[in-house]
Image (cartoon, rainbow, N blue to C red; front, side, top):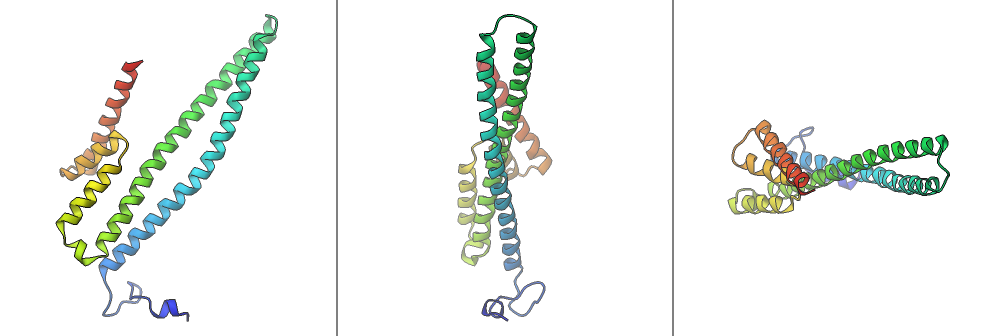
Length: 185
C-alpha cells in the first residue's frame, strides 16, 4: 500500500473516529467541479475545431458567391446562387449553435468557480461558521456573472425563490434583454 493511502483521512467507505460529513461534502463538491471542468475543456476543444472549420466554409462560400456573380446570367448561375445562399444560411445557423455553446461554457465555468469557492469555505471551520465569509462568497459569485439571466436567477434564489421560480426569473430577464436588443435594430 502506498504512503498516500495510509495517511488518507477516513471516508464513508472506511469511517473511523476521524470521519467527517464536511470532508465528504467537500470531496463531492470537488468531484463535481472536476467533472464540470473536464466537460468544459473537452467541449471547448471540439467547438474550436468546429468554429475554425465553419469559418473556412463561410469564407469559401462567400468566394464562390463572388465568382458566380461574374458568370453570365442563366439557370446554372441561379442554381449556384440559390445553393450557396442556402449553404450560408445553414452555416450561420450552425454559428449560432456555436455561440450557444460559448454561453453554456461561460455558465458552467461560473458554476465550477462557485463550487470551488464553496468547497474552500466548507473545508475551513473558521470560514464555514462566519457569515461575513458567506456574504463575501455571494458577492464574489454575483460579480462573476456576465449574463443578465444568471444575475436574475442568483437574486431570485437568494430572495428565497424555488428553483422553478428562479429559472423563470432567468428566462424573463434573458427574454427582456433579447427584446431590447431587437428594438435597437
